[in-house]
Image (cartoon, rainbow, N blue to C red):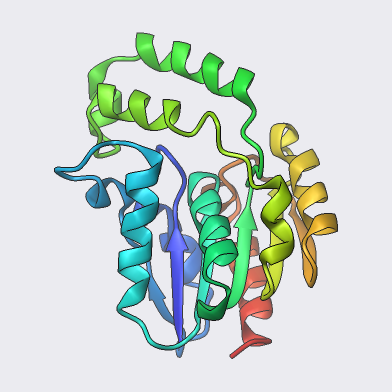
Length: 208
């Protein structure tokens, strides 16, 4: 059974390395680099999502998908549109309706950051900004009921921006439970990877 880990914006596949060390040895874990999926393509959310669909088509068995932030949004949309492909879903620090004001403020900050900061993440600066802009209108509020697999919603205890949305996700998605990770902000997979790995290991083992 496959376990696909989708990292957040500004992260890479390496961001999961300490988390997956805690997983059972028989878990087949896949950690794609999202920036690689945009190589040579239009840098927008829709392109990224369509590439995820193509990526998942290669697997015949139901999937376990875990996503953080941007990765969580991608995983959530996939679970909404392809319920027959899902075995379980984990959403970490994930918004189901994009906070437009926050995205605009982030873009202002990105504009003054040096290009080298984005290259470390595998992006060109303009591509990174365009990707963020393309997410502004995303809203899955009225489609959450289409998620039929078992769901674990995760949020860091210090992630004030996403905690409210995480609690609402747990309430609005049938068969969803929630886990608050201590001593972690938004990037739970790097702030407290061991505790996150333990929580995910227990959750995933229920659906092997």
